[in-house]
Length: 158
Image (tube, rainbow, N blue to C red):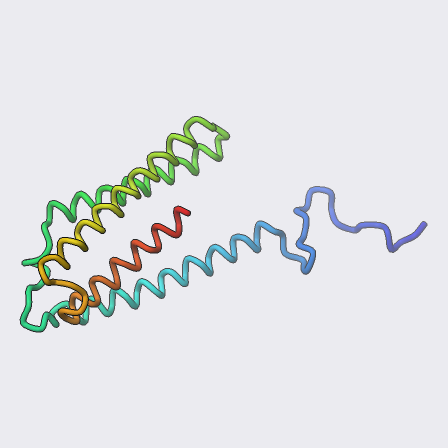
């Protein structure tokens, strides 16, 4: 009997990757955590810059004068509802329910698009009132933070 051809792996073990002993599931999970941690680091830096520059208005308007709390609440609700719908889609996938998967993904996309549309409308309004990103350090940090978040959402949905 040729011993080189005999596999010593247990029958119930997960298949390993071609280049090492780790299973594909472990490698994908590790990659996801690296992605998540890089997002946390990047957005932490953006939030820190925004917090530091919050009062640097260059004599111009600050957050209280620029932002409508009702509009911000609607944007936040759209974003949170789209995250919830995405979670529901994950559960529907696990249950192999195609109808609920599709409906949840549709809701996720529509709510995400609504959020992005409201953000673009807000950006347009701010620039139209002379409160663009070049007006002050505060507005620079705001446009960077919110713009990068919008780009992140757009790329995550693609």
